Length: 183
Image (cartoon, rainbow, N blue to C red; front, top):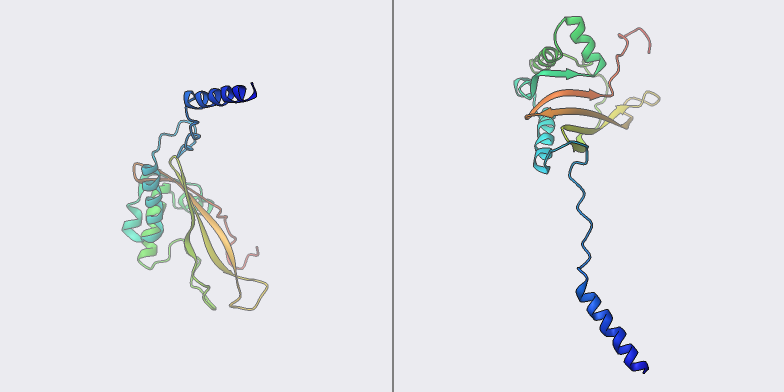
C-alpha cells in the first residue's frame, strides 16, 4: 500500500509539473520608468551623446547643440543674460563664442599657481526621459593647504534634450561676489 501511495504521489507530481506553465522570469525593468515617458533606450543614448558632445566641443559647434528656446537655471549665467538684456540662448551663444575666440566669456580669469590634475568630464552619465545628468570629478586647490595641494570635488550638469538639441540646463552654480568683496 505504501509503495502504491508513493507511486500515485509521484505520478501526480509529475503530471502537475508538466501541466503547470513554466514560471516566467519577472518582466525587465522599463528603460525609462518616468510616468508618461516614451523614450526608447536608443533615444536615451542619443540624448546622452548630445550632452557629452557639449563638453567635447567649443565655439560654433557647441552653440549648434542648443535650441533657440534654451532655458538656463544657472543663476550666474541667468544674471549675465538679464544684465545684458538678452535671452538665455543669446547669452549661451555669446559666452561660448567668446570663450572659443579667447575673449574670456564666463570664466574665472587666468589661473595662477600649480595646475590641478585633470578632471573627468564624465564620471557618471545618466538619462531618464529627456533629462541627462553628468557628474564631473574635478580637483580644486585646498584653501587650507600649501599651493599644489588639491582635493576631489564632484559637480553636476543636467540638461533637457529635445529633438537632438539642448533646451534647458541646471547645475549647482552660485553667484560669487566680485573679487575683493569677501565671501
